[in-house]
Length: 591
Ligand code: AGP
Image (cartoon, rainbow, N blue to C red; front, top):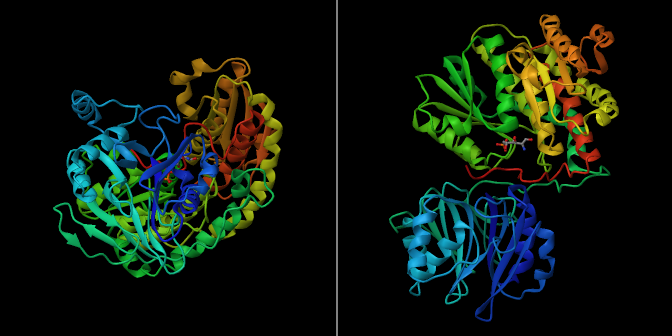
């Protein structure tokens, strides 16, 4: 899982590659590298760590080059394992995973070849050099036919200095044709510029780029014509705007992100067709990963409560390898901030192949998921840079809740949800109240484990609060259904264990409080996020935050805000960078 970029044309390649790589760091940032062809040899720079470490490479003079920012799959994040991998006449960058690397490596070793890295990609460079007989594209076609797994590959040969060959299977890859040359990247924003034509490589397709043109080929070698994609340039340049971290700045944008997203459904150009599909929907599957999966869980509660349609929510990496029952009139909703998550894309493809209507909920307009779906609803959260999703989660919830209301009205269950309209203002209040959790931080710093408890929608918020804390503070944590704790997990509670209870349902409050008593009795320090002021004074509660009340069904959109803030403050107090947590990447583009 990584980002790749390339350029061939009239300009010096290195600054273009470095600029593109910075924009691709959301796909991985544990090592980076570039290679350009200069005077019939490769100029290469690779570094462990982020793209910033490559700044000295901006003086490389070559006009053909490739670059890579890495999230380690095979091999530790070291300089040796960073891409590009150079072998013989070949330089290669790769996004994906080669699953048959073992037999391929043995084949190379038998030929007496030796390796300098632990990566699967280096093996591909060996194969490519082996097949190379003066035609880079032909060699890449032969190489790709030997590979099992996923790849977006960009290759250079010293013998064809003005060319870049590309291959794609299950990892995204786009090509840009500009005034001054031809570009490639894992996504559009990394290369998009005024007047550039952008093309997406399809599954198992190849391309050959030179400074003036791009030629595209199908798997069988036939040259194919492609239409440029429709896209518009992104206006917003991500800045911290006075905040110390992007995560905090993005949290401050939650009210705006909610307000902008609320407009989306009503102004959706295909709303009548979508309503028609929703009207006939008998089953809904929601597929997603991580935080987006938690949005799906929240949406299930809302859709089932409001529209009485059965909803299955599945982790995409499980769904794609199951044999899910997809019946007539099943709508599959794929939720993904980035629209590039490999497992979500695979689950969405499976749903489409099986005849379901595919509705994408994504924050990225020209993403792979947006291009795949029958219907696309965009969350208007704006660019999210921090790895920990915050405002995009709130936006996903608002959009999915609006969809629940659409479904309810399509099923003749009456219009409701008026309370949703006041959400931007209520989110502002919740943000202000969340500052109180800063005082909770010392109780969490050295914790062996942390528990987030809730029932119903509060349990969904608990799951998200726990994920956020794990992801950026590195503290072990669990989000748990409050009533389930006593069936085993209670054994983990000891003196001083922090427990955060979420309480927004007056119907379920006393039931959740049972779990609070049980943990308190065993020495836990209990913190409370609630919309029910009467519970703040209970003796078991060490400290609490009061959020506005919007009823239990839609409550996670507000109750998650103090939990996001808690994760942020604990992470910062522990000296972590919440924007770039260890081992993670913003977008997970391998399975
Ligand atoms: C959230 O904080 C995480 N970074 C992660 O769980 C993320 O939500 C997940 O990888 C899915 O990403 P997507 O929404 O871009 O598909």
